[in-house]
Length: 138
Ligand SMILES: [Zn+2]
Ligand SMILES: [Zn+2]
Ligand SMILES: [Zn+2]
Image (tube, rainbow, N blue to C red):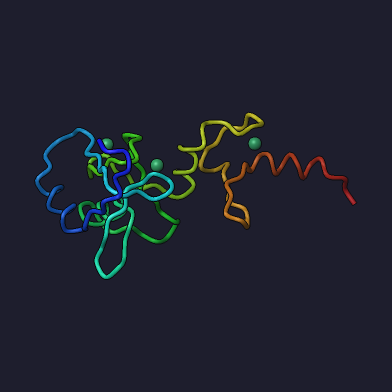
């Protein structure tokens, strides 16, 4: 494997690779990745997309905008684009999986206990409730 592989894969190349894929193993792309480590795919006319999002839409189905859905790798391999390993989660469910099970105050991170603040940061609902309880009442 080359260290600095910044070659891009075109959407149609990926599509034809995957249409021949008949395997339950991870299918890892070694092409150009975004800063978070997820491979990207060129859609033509200067547009690109996350490979897993492209693959999901192409091989599994539409991604509903409602609920800020995100494509998750059930195999936990960022570079993998095997459609069998891709799972659609809401933004909250997804954050709960990646953030670890507990917040720094030991509250369990369940989709119900997670919310996003005005900056888009993931926060713990129980921590906020505790903070508000500590605030002096007027
Ligand atoms: Zn995989
Ligand atoms: Zn994920
Ligand atoms: Zn907490």
